[in-house]
Image (tube, rainbow, N blue to C red; front, side, top):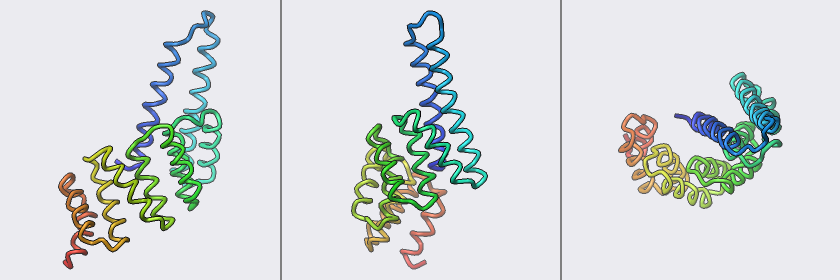
Length: 191
Protein backbone atom coordinates (compact mmCIF):
# COMPACT_ATOMS: atom_id res chain seq x y z
CA UNK A 1 0.00 0.00 0.00
CA UNK A 2 1.18 3.52 -0.70
CA UNK A 3 1.30 6.14 2.03
CA UNK A 4 -1.68 7.89 0.42
CA UNK A 5 -3.70 4.66 0.47
CA UNK A 6 -2.82 4.11 4.12
CA UNK A 7 -3.86 7.67 4.93
CA UNK A 8 -7.12 7.20 3.00
CA UNK A 9 -7.87 3.95 4.82
CA UNK A 10 -7.11 5.51 8.18
CA UNK A 11 -9.25 8.56 7.46
CA UNK A 12 -12.21 6.43 6.43
CA UNK A 13 -12.00 4.33 9.57
CA UNK A 14 -11.59 7.39 11.73
CA UNK A 15 -14.62 9.14 10.23
CA UNK A 16 -16.77 6.03 10.64
CA UNK A 17 -15.72 5.71 14.27
CA UNK A 18 -16.37 9.38 14.97
CA UNK A 19 -19.86 9.18 13.49
CA UNK A 20 -20.57 6.07 15.58
CA UNK A 21 -19.19 7.78 18.68
CA UNK A 22 -21.37 10.84 18.13
CA UNK A 23 -24.44 8.72 17.48
CA UNK A 24 -23.92 6.83 20.74
CA UNK A 25 -23.48 9.97 22.82
CA UNK A 26 -26.36 12.07 21.50
CA UNK A 27 -28.88 13.18 24.14
CA UNK A 28 -31.20 15.40 22.07
CA UNK A 29 -34.57 13.54 21.87
CA UNK A 30 -35.93 15.41 18.82
CA UNK A 31 -33.03 14.30 16.63
CA UNK A 32 -31.91 17.76 15.47
CA UNK A 33 -28.50 17.50 17.07
CA UNK A 34 -28.00 14.09 15.44
CA UNK A 35 -28.75 15.56 12.01
CA UNK A 36 -26.32 18.42 12.59
CA UNK A 37 -23.52 16.07 13.63
CA UNK A 38 -24.03 13.78 10.65
CA UNK A 39 -24.24 16.73 8.26
CA UNK A 40 -20.93 18.09 9.54
CA UNK A 41 -19.22 14.71 9.09
CA UNK A 42 -20.77 14.23 5.67
CA UNK A 43 -19.53 17.68 4.69
CA UNK A 44 -15.99 16.79 5.72
CA UNK A 45 -16.25 13.42 3.99
CA UNK A 46 -17.58 15.11 0.86
CA UNK A 47 -14.75 17.64 0.90
CA UNK A 48 -12.17 14.88 1.29
CA UNK A 49 -13.77 12.89 -1.52
CA UNK A 50 -13.72 15.92 -3.82
CA UNK A 51 -10.10 16.59 -2.84
CA UNK A 52 -9.20 13.00 -3.77
CA UNK A 53 -10.84 13.43 -7.16
CA UNK A 54 -9.01 16.72 -7.71
CA UNK A 55 -5.70 15.10 -6.73
CA UNK A 56 -6.29 12.15 -9.06
CA UNK A 57 -6.98 14.63 -11.88
CA UNK A 58 -3.75 16.51 -11.13
CA UNK A 59 -5.48 19.57 -9.70
CA UNK A 60 -3.31 19.97 -6.61
CA UNK A 61 -4.35 23.53 -5.78
CA UNK A 62 -8.02 22.55 -5.78
CA UNK A 63 -7.27 19.48 -3.64
CA UNK A 64 -5.36 21.64 -1.20
CA UNK A 65 -8.18 24.19 -0.94
CA UNK A 66 -10.77 21.46 -0.32
CA UNK A 67 -8.66 19.79 2.35
CA UNK A 68 -7.94 23.13 3.98
CA UNK A 69 -11.68 23.83 4.09
CA UNK A 70 -12.28 20.43 5.70
CA UNK A 71 -9.51 21.06 8.22
CA UNK A 72 -11.07 24.41 9.09
CA UNK A 73 -14.12 22.41 10.25
CA UNK A 74 -11.99 20.16 12.43
CA UNK A 75 -8.23 20.58 12.78
CA UNK A 76 -8.01 17.67 15.22
CA UNK A 77 -8.24 14.83 12.69
CA UNK A 78 -4.70 13.51 12.13
CA UNK A 79 -5.57 11.69 8.89
CA UNK A 80 -6.99 14.88 7.41
CA UNK A 81 -3.94 16.87 8.43
CA UNK A 82 -1.68 14.17 6.98
CA UNK A 83 -3.56 14.33 3.67
CA UNK A 84 -3.21 18.08 3.54
CA UNK A 85 0.49 17.71 4.34
CA UNK A 86 0.87 15.23 1.50
CA UNK A 87 -0.74 17.61 -1.02
CA UNK A 88 1.33 20.55 0.21
CA UNK A 89 4.46 18.42 -0.09
CA UNK A 90 3.52 17.42 -3.64
CA UNK A 91 3.28 21.13 -4.40
CA UNK A 92 6.87 21.52 -3.19
CA UNK A 93 6.24 23.39 0.07
CA UNK A 94 8.16 21.13 2.43
CA UNK A 95 8.27 23.59 5.33
CA UNK A 96 4.48 23.93 5.38
CA UNK A 97 4.07 20.17 4.95
CA UNK A 98 6.43 19.62 7.87
CA UNK A 99 4.31 21.90 10.08
CA UNK A 100 1.17 20.00 9.11
CA UNK A 101 2.76 16.61 9.77
CA UNK A 102 4.07 17.80 13.14
CA UNK A 103 0.54 18.93 14.01
CA UNK A 104 -0.82 15.51 13.02
CA UNK A 105 1.86 13.88 15.15
CA UNK A 106 0.84 16.02 18.13
CA UNK A 107 -2.68 14.63 17.75
CA UNK A 108 -1.67 10.97 17.42
CA UNK A 109 1.68 9.29 17.07
CA UNK A 110 1.80 6.99 14.04
CA UNK A 111 4.62 5.44 12.07
CA UNK A 112 3.35 6.87 8.77
CA UNK A 113 3.41 10.39 10.19
CA UNK A 114 6.99 9.90 11.39
CA UNK A 115 7.87 8.67 7.90
CA UNK A 116 6.25 11.73 6.34
CA UNK A 117 8.12 14.05 8.70
CA UNK A 118 11.39 12.26 7.95
CA UNK A 119 10.74 12.63 4.23
CA UNK A 120 10.18 16.38 4.56
CA UNK A 121 13.27 16.80 6.73
CA UNK A 122 15.31 14.86 4.17
CA UNK A 123 14.01 17.16 1.41
CA UNK A 124 15.06 20.15 3.51
CA UNK A 125 18.54 18.71 4.07
CA UNK A 126 17.98 18.16 7.80
CA UNK A 127 19.29 14.62 7.70
CA UNK A 128 20.06 14.06 11.38
CA UNK A 129 16.54 15.12 12.35
CA UNK A 130 15.13 12.84 9.64
CA UNK A 131 17.08 9.93 11.10
CA UNK A 132 15.33 10.37 14.47
CA UNK A 133 11.93 10.08 12.81
CA UNK A 134 12.86 7.05 10.71
CA UNK A 135 14.05 5.28 13.84
CA UNK A 136 10.82 6.15 15.64
CA UNK A 137 8.72 4.90 12.71
CA UNK A 138 10.60 1.61 12.78
CA UNK A 139 10.12 1.34 16.55
CA UNK A 140 6.37 1.84 16.11
CA UNK A 141 6.08 -0.73 13.30
CA UNK A 142 9.16 -2.95 13.01
CA UNK A 143 7.55 -4.96 10.20
CA UNK A 144 7.00 -2.09 7.76
CA UNK A 145 9.55 -2.61 4.99
CA UNK A 146 9.08 0.87 3.51
CA UNK A 147 10.43 2.44 6.71
CA UNK A 148 13.65 0.42 6.41
CA UNK A 149 13.93 1.19 2.70
CA UNK A 150 13.49 4.94 3.19
CA UNK A 151 15.84 4.94 6.17
CA UNK A 152 18.44 3.14 4.05
CA UNK A 153 18.10 5.83 1.38
CA UNK A 154 18.76 8.47 4.02
CA UNK A 155 21.80 6.56 5.28
CA UNK A 156 23.16 6.50 1.71
CA UNK A 157 22.72 10.30 1.61
CA UNK A 158 24.68 10.45 4.87
CA UNK A 159 27.47 8.24 3.42
CA UNK A 160 26.79 5.51 5.97
CA UNK A 161 26.92 2.66 3.47
CA UNK A 162 27.31 -0.27 5.86
CA UNK A 163 24.24 0.76 7.84
CA UNK A 164 22.31 1.41 4.63
CA UNK A 165 23.07 -2.12 3.43
CA UNK A 166 21.68 -3.53 6.68
CA UNK A 167 18.48 -1.51 6.30
CA UNK A 168 17.99 -2.62 2.68
CA UNK A 169 18.56 -6.21 3.78
CA UNK A 170 15.99 -5.83 6.56
CA UNK A 171 13.46 -4.40 4.09
CA UNK A 172 14.07 -7.40 1.81
CA UNK A 173 13.79 -9.81 4.72
CA UNK A 174 10.29 -8.45 5.41
CA UNK A 175 9.29 -8.10 1.75
CA UNK A 176 11.48 -10.13 -0.63
CA UNK A 177 9.62 -8.68 -3.64
CA UNK A 178 10.71 -5.11 -2.87
CA UNK A 179 12.80 -4.83 -6.03
CA UNK A 180 13.82 -1.22 -5.40
CA UNK A 181 15.60 -2.30 -2.20
CA UNK A 182 17.38 -5.10 -4.04
CA UNK A 183 18.46 -2.70 -6.79
CA UNK A 184 19.86 -0.21 -4.27
CA UNK A 185 21.60 -2.96 -2.35
CA UNK A 186 23.15 -4.25 -5.58
CA UNK A 187 24.45 -0.75 -6.35
CA UNK A 188 26.08 -0.53 -2.92
CA UNK A 189 27.60 -3.97 -3.41
CA UNK A 190 28.98 -2.98 -6.82
CA UNK A 191 26.81 -5.35 -8.85
